[in-house]
Length: 85
Image 1 (cartoon, helix red, strand yellow):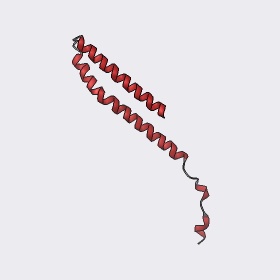
Image 2: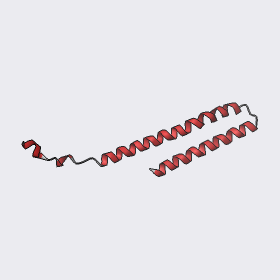
Image 3: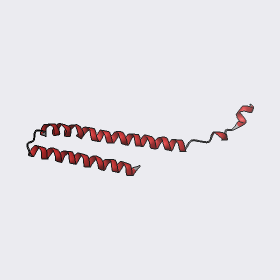
Image 4: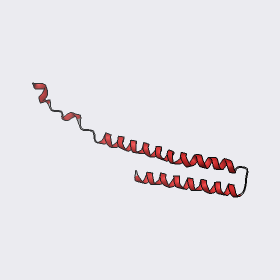
């Protein structure tokens, strides 16, 4: 689980750095796509971390569900003394 979280974080950092580099290069070349790349950069600055957080949240829920299913008590060991009263 920790490995998956680290990989997700590393992918997010790499994507954001590449996005910022492409925006800087587009602004220096004075291309027509500069403003569009800047808007994409602003959007992705918010969207990529949120997406990684959502994936991380689902991984945690899956882990809790898996751990919860493995730790359920056995229902065959009920005490039958209560029914005799």
